[in-house]
Image (cartoon, rainbow over the protein chains, first blue to last red):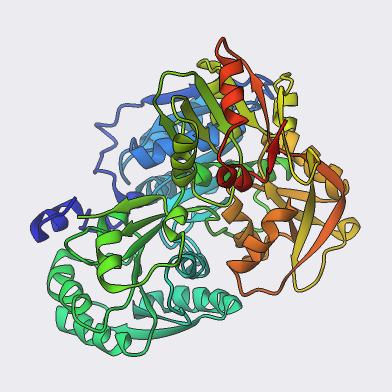
Length: 344
Length: 214
């Protein structure tokens, strides 16, 4: 399906931190929030303990719920409560009061923000351990709620490179990334991990509030030095203005370099932004979160290793086949390693 | 979404639950062309397998240990090199893992938490903490991110794992062997579906680790 540039931009969930599904909730207010239980699973081997799952209603969160409930539902009662935005603290507080859960699962950034406000208002009270999923840049986050761990939403660069090498016939040794200074630490950690797979990361740093010319300049510089580009899910780098006047012109001039993005909406035949999107597999993310919850339960319902967060293990790959066929060579059988193929 | 894919046809319904080294989309497509006339559903997780099985099928194709857990008996078994079982291997980063010293092992989630943990500990020893993943490709990140000492998988898949990584991956084949894919009838058209499995194209059977069906 080919999109016009306008349709492409309209389809991309930009705006005030809305790069990913992790930020996709609308704004709610505590006064308007009605406490709604979306799902409830009854355990076949009940332990008498419950887990409160705070989530917005999206396709992705439903998939995470499936993974969670398949894994945890046998032993624990799982209650899914609808949380719509960072002002939904009252909803979470009501759920905690009503169910006294042994553990919590928090899905997406606004839900985490809402829970943080619950903790702030409660002062020094004790809280059940929480597992955070679908929250961007969770690793190294200074303002994480107390007694919480989780799984970062960003697919690690090492996984991105491994997937790309299975698909593209040319050598992938050096990966370029445009970064803002606040994300330099994240990129450094990813680069260190990617080095295990003999991948060098070439960084181009732009200002905190870059203009399209900076993006184009950075792209031109990087494209002559690297075998692939990795686009960070940084909403400050992916505003409609920067996509339209910086990224798209910069990426659609020679030399061609395969571009990996972390949002499916950035892969669209006809626009030639991302060549591939590598995203977390949301059902598998639910399974991974469930395993983390089992670890917590085995640790007497305390978070083992407070500073530790995990990286997502399982991913899905989407390819813009039109762009690939025009610009790159695929390995034999490469498409058998792709979950979703888009073409004009 | 319960399933990875369903190919619609009228000659019986087959549920396939196997972990292989290609994406479920590609696997579904191969089965669709290899089993004309049969409605094939492929799934990659035990939860989905149980749900789809309850919806009504004529036959299932999976590992014998999964059939056993469902109290089903195989009526057709895959063989390779004359054997209905295959070797499993432990793969580590940098050196061949010693099963007695592995404190954490990654493996494919075949039977759910309790069943898979028991299976993995039977293979490597009771000391091992088990990390389960749902796809063959997810075993490598466990090693890359140093989440486990070793991963456990069918030995035939080790070369695929090694080909996708530049880590110095080293394997140790284990003594215990595990049953190759097998089929069981669960519905009225079970016999005809199983007969069709026996005629699967050779390249599809090989993908499952099988060179002959008996």
